Length: 455
Image 1 (cartoon, rainbow, N blue to C red):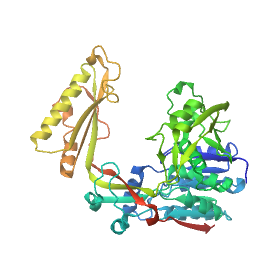
Image 2 (cartoon, helix red, strand yellow):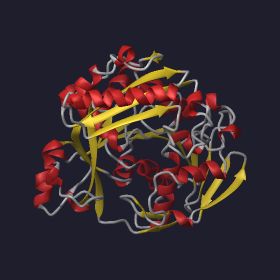
Image 3 (tube, one colour):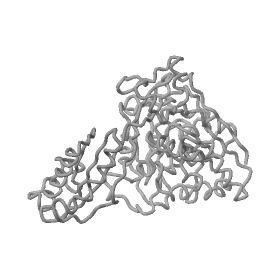
Image 4 (cartoon, rainbow, N blue to C red):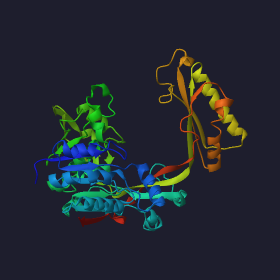
């Protein structure tokens, strides 16, 4: 058993800093590189891509990054774990193997974890007692079943541990929890029992701190002015120990900041009830967490308590719920605010005169209380603003109404208030709204599949 394992974060979301995983493997020692790509909306986006192209449906950036660092992975013995597989983990695995063969790299094992897609099993699961009611509203899934685009089970660390036990060097998953990517190496390396709830909670919280990438090393930090080296920011590294304690740090040569406050801000991110952070692996108690600054850019995390896991997996479903369209016009001084408000009023009346119906019509002034409405500091003379951007959004079930909305924007330039100085993006096109449907399914009804391939 190792005395310490260094687990690095290389991505916090699909579209994160492309250089980060490369820096993590080349700027210092790590044992594992974890890369988180998935959010609830990401799965529906990937599913739409796959419907247009059966070979798509995964984070295309991931195989490109793997291609760049494959020589490092093999030379240094670094293991990579990522949920970049999205709705097509098998296709993602195939692309990685293709790149490895191009480079002439052999001797590595690639594991793929799938079986999380239950879209075609909804009726079957219901017949076996899985209600799949909306967790927030209690509504039956029958309300949206015909409009479902994706439905994926959140698996945890267990299948990743199985892949590591099978000798995998690169692990590609579908919908596995962000925290499971980090917890799994700890279970595997330290031989933790999966019913040791305090240790499961410790690894889960470590995963929570790492899951958003540089958000725990100074990115998106309230005291951003204290952070040095944003242009070359280092992503977080977890130094994990067998007793469940760990230290959050980063590579010394990279920028960023690791202190108690950067870690605390990430800890507060998307946790709900702090005493019951529920994952497939355990329930973690965030109120038990203790932090201690033990060196420059080094924060020790300890004292974590956990509770038994629930008998359910969470299911993330997405369904088509109409259309939306957004556009902007920029108005300049004088009377920028008044002109923008008048333009919005004119547009809304014209749409009403055409008999068009929308579920929502929203006009916002970007540059004037668009983010915080009336909370922000007020301006003494509101029409002294140099310029303001009018952003108008509509949503509804009628595609034709959305399309006509887009055709009514440009005419405002010459048939409304003066001084339009910007019409960003041209005529807007309607885009689909993917709505979220969270549900629960008994664990015994869904089983992950782990396949391992030798390169």
